[in-house]
Length: 279
Ligand SMILES: [Ca+2]
Ligand SMILES: [Ca+2]
Image 1 (cartoon, protein in one colour):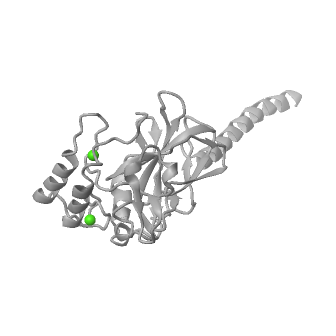
Image 2 (cartoon, protein in one colour; image 1 turned 180 degrees about the horizontal axis):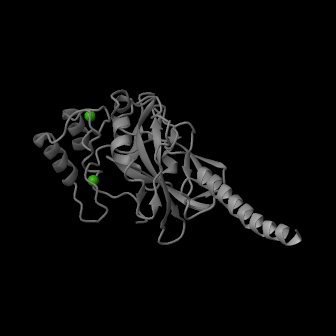
Image 3 (cartoon, protein in one colour; image 1 turned 90 degrees about the horizontal axis):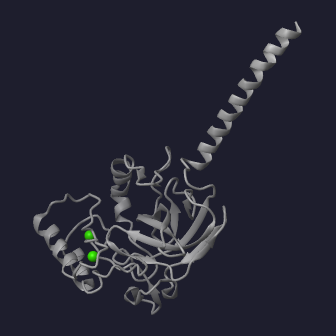
């Protein structure tokens, strides 16, 4: 009898350990969603304006959302590409929708504060029409979520498909689950970007991401002809269908036409600088 009991205990203990490990793993996977490189969840809330979509006063257009172009892009393009290199890009979680009021998608990167300023994490976020953001996965939180890095001090870089990238002037200290707020509409926040300053209809000096960067090349070989040349080519060749998430739609209204070309022409002298001085 004692021997049988001993055998039973010997069986139960490993099973219990195995089960508890599985439960822990499942919980961790649910919470962290494919975390591989870090243990912390960093939260970033920003204010950002995208030139072209911005009305010059207090909001941006939401045509890509109204025409369901963002929704199609999220489902058809982004979902199959969850992992890019070593970076896990979040996808919208099942059951969540593109948030109402979304203008477009931006990519936000955290860079180390020491040379060579490596990218330590990267995530996507929805830009909302009032200049705030939402987390990409659910569209419900008013902050972007980074879960592949640890707490630390990082520069914040923002990229968009056809706007010039920008980066913060200083590095910010992130702690686990504490939301950092950065107002990128304040010109002082952006590093070396005199070109992005604009005066709004209400005579406020604000910063925004410069529109029209349809040709992206981080090398020094890019000239100020590239963006204009590519925009002309897009218009002339008409290799697009409206209602498509397209790099030529500079003002983010869901169509590609002379309005987009005018913006690229107007900004052509700014568009060949890769404005991340540290790269
Ligand atoms: Ca360019
Ligand atoms: Ca357009």
